[in-house]
Image (cartoon, rainbow, N blue to C red; front, side, top):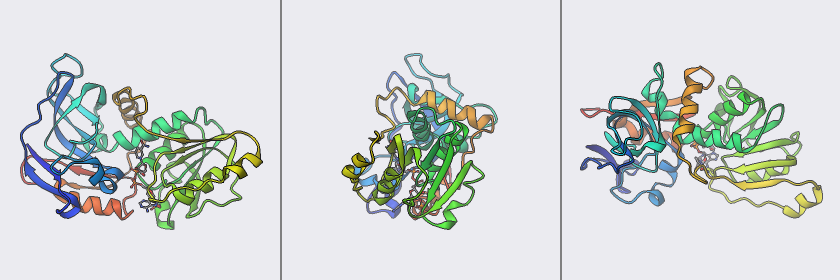
Length: 312
Ligand SMILES: NC(=O)c1ccc[n+]([C@@H]2O[C@H](COP(=O)([O-])OP(=O)(O)OC[C@H]3O[C@@H](n4cnc5c(N)ncnc54)[C@H](OP(=O)(O)O)[C@@H]3O)[C@@H](O)[C@H]2O)c1
C-alpha cells in the first residue's frame, strides 16, 4: 500500500512511501481509504504518538475491501468511517469493527472522515455534562475541530452556548452553528456562571473558565492546545461555597468502541442537524500543507485529505 509515515526529518514529519499491506486481525475489517482527517494530536504530539516509520492519522473513511474474519461488521463494498489510533494516512487500513460505522447514502467520504475523533470527543463531552437543556455551556477553543462540533451538539441539546476563540477572525460562523455568545481571547471574570465547560485550550483559559463555574458545575479538561499548564486556586473555590468539579476528560475512558458514536454523528449529518465544518480540503499530496495550517490555527474546523492510490 501507499502511505505517509512519521519521519521527523521530513516536511511536517510526513514521508510518502510504499509499505506492506496491513494484515487484519480476526475482528478487523480491511478498508480502502478514500479520505482522512488530521487532528491536533497528529500535528502537536506526533513525535510522542508515532514511532518513526509508523502511519499516523486516526480518522479515515473508505470502503470495506475485506470483511472481518470473525463475521462482525459490514460486508465488502460497504462505505464506512473509522476511528483508531494511527494508520489513517494510507491507501489501506485494518480497523476493529467496533470502531467503525456505516456511512449513510448522501454523506460523502470526506465528510465521514472529518467526524470521528473530534466528533466523538465533542459528543461524549456534551453527554458527560448531563442535561444541558436551558443551561449555559462554555466551549473554549471553539474554532477548532472539537470546538465546532461541541458548539453544535451542546446547542442542539438545548444549551445556551458561550464560545471562546483566540482572535476575532476565529469567531467566523460560530453563531450560525448555535453559539449564543462569542468571547474573544480571555474568559472575563464577570461572565455569567456556566453549568458546564468543555475546555480545549488549558492554561489560564481553563483557570478562568473554572472561576465562572456555577454551583454544581462541571469543567471538562478535554485538551491543552495552548501547551500551558493550569493553575487553579482551589482555596478560592472552597470559599465560594458549593461543589464544582474539574475533570480530566479522555475520549476513550472505559473504551466501548467508537463505532456507535460515529454512527450517531453520521445520522445527525445525514439529517442536516450537524455540519461537518471542513475548513481545509485537498489531496493527500498536500498533507504537510494541511498540517501546517492546522498547527498555525488557520483551519476553521477540520482538515480533510483525499486519498487516492495513483498520483494525488
Ligand atoms: N481528551 C481527549 O480525549 C481529546 C480528544 C480529542 C482532542 N483532544 C484535545 O482537544 C484539543 C482540541 O483538539 P482539536 O482537534 O479541536 O484541535 P484544533 O482543531 O487544532 O483546535 C484547537 C483549538 O485550540 C485553540 N488554541 C488556543 N491556543 C492554541 C495554541 N497555542 N495552539 C493551537 N491551538 C490553540 C485554537 O483556537 P484559537 O486559534 O481560536 O485560539 C484552536 O481552535 C487538543 O488539545 C486535543 O489534543 C482531546
